Length: 99
Image (tube, rainbow, N blue to C red):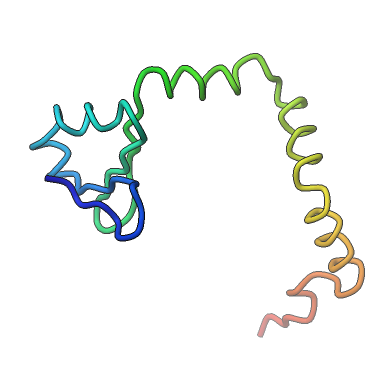
């Protein structure tokens, strides 16, 4: 049927497998997302309607400003680290010369 990643229950299938076994893939997607690969990279994720609704509800109604605030709070330490690195070292390309 589909290829399961070793040591994981995550299902990853090729686009051809997804096309040929769509019913089985949809059945599996009711329990967990199914990752569809194209050219060796994840191209599409198949979710159940319930998973999609939950994902949509978690983002719906939040303005860009609210989403930015949540992002800033979640990644505060990383942002501060990047700002400190910039203050100390400047831009990585400051000393590049165009010939």
